[in-house]
Length: 386
Ligand SMILES: *Cc1c(COP(=O)(O)O)cnc(C)c1O
Image 1 (cartoon, rainbow, N blue to C red):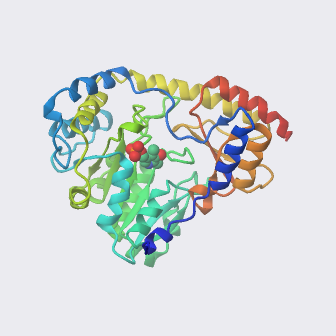
Image 2: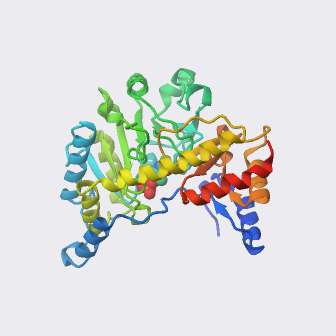
Image 3: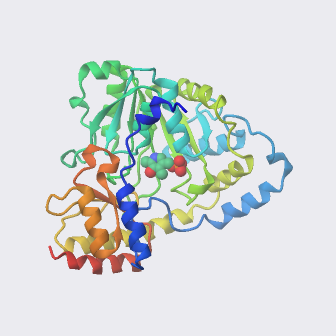
């Protein structure tokens, strides 16, 4: 067998050690509190499930769907954007259904990156931005997300020659893993930068609705000129607790959407129509579950932030996402600190290095377990004696 070189370019799996330690702890009967899972722990709302049950019985949903998504789904997306952000989208040319947003994020690189091309990638960041570039034989150019810059990339720090050559930039706010948010000023700077350097901006907007304390996230497309340079990737996964359903969408610049569709029509055959029907129900039906979930996450966030601050951390309340991005103790590496937590407290967190070199010195906590368990976790952490 002669496995492709591109498989070997993918960074080694960094969590192997912690996975092994986790298995050992479980075998020993340790009561593990797993704060490493970025997946909602509550079920999909009932109205969405009922819509799927109904749709799946209709034989008209059983054949191949249109590649770009059924027209009703694309119109529901366009309506949702209009109501939520005041952004107008042409449902026929500026909206495309995805098999989860990860699918579209991975494939957009094949549509824009030729061998040797640069992409501009945030670090720490969702790992697919980097691997997507590598699969297209491109070079990821790292934009560090630093605490002193509120985890926004400093566009002026980007090498000018690289900027000129780069084809595509990814940004992601509200951000995984740092929980940072961005305002329209930042998006305006990104549009200017993209126009100057003729770059496609891809905004990963998976956490648009997961926001707290009356904060509402802006769409990148709200900014003047954004649609000339950018697209936004969206997902029903986190907003409606639908990670397993695999439904997302890309919206914005029609040339970019059309280029993505050339890749997709040659790789997949779209999203099961019954799932798209359920997606329409999610986007156009009652939205009260979003607020309910956000209240739950706010309560959990408060438990962990208050708990950690009592132990000596100095964390501010986050505005969005179910993640907390926590500096390690005593300048420990993120892997050392994660191992220490697991050994001494049975708590699993994700080492920041897994999101890139600038994730070193941090761990990510996911607020995807019940408040009671988080209180228990805060109790256990007292043994660390800061
Ligand atoms: C969860 C997540 C996604 C992917 O979600 P899908 O389930 O593929 O729609 C994309 N980007 C970020 C940053 C995420 O955290």
